[in-house]
Length: 149
Image (cartoon, rainbow, N blue to C red):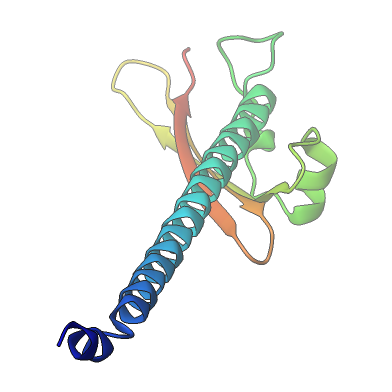
């Protein structure tokens, strides 16, 4: 009687092994997907930070043109313009590899205060992109500045 019950149970170990292999394979696929997703998020975060600092640097370069060192209280309104791609390439220092300044816009406005000389207010907005065709991040930064006279 024991021999016949053994024949009926034959192959159950194979089913358990197949079940374990399938479950472990699915777990491996899920873990790979999580790892890839984490790497992509980290890459986007780093590229976004680089783009933010590149846009910040572009604003600082234009601010040094607006407020030259020789005249700390006055500005140079001629430096306030919308910079073309060629102007940016000639004006900006070389940035990190894979980063570029897309545009720089400068606008100014005269503020009249009764009994005092008018003050010029500047608004700078620069946009930078870091990355490649696969993963690229763009950041825009805005800065406001004014004369002190």
